[in-house]
Length: 185
Image (cartoon, rainbow, N blue to C red; front, side, top):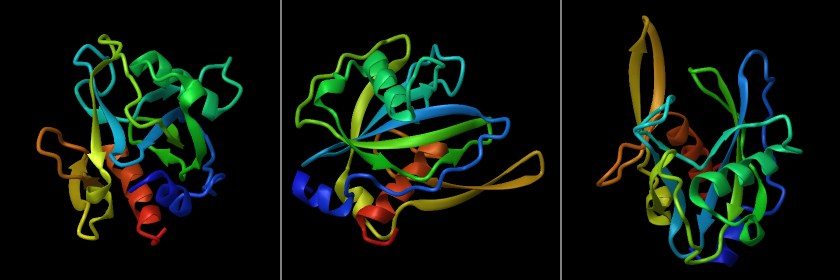
């Protein structure tokens, strides 16, 4: 999928549902789309306190000095993977996502230049990889799963990848993105 197709499917200023913060910790993630390749994901370092080794988007908590969730997502992407904010073209936001671990995530969708250089902060990120657009456009994906946590039923989505398990908040955010790209969202 090239840049023109992405822009047509995900126009600037994406509308999103903003949820109330309540007692959840505000966080922002960058959903980087590289034309011709796919969506960038990271595998968190095993040294991380929260969600060690899991697949995620570049991002983290919104700091008091961040002027917006977009600024927080860009700052975090710079800190984690060395993605220069100057080359990033923000398209808008996806619906907010609340995690079972108490985070209120605002996903910020952006185009990144083809072949943009990354430099991972190894204390936070083990690797950066792409999930191809072909996977996101497959109407049979993702697979829905159910788990029980303290007798509460939790539904979540799992995306296939030969080297990684993509699920949880990342799986849910990817599903919203996929529905938009397919014209179903």
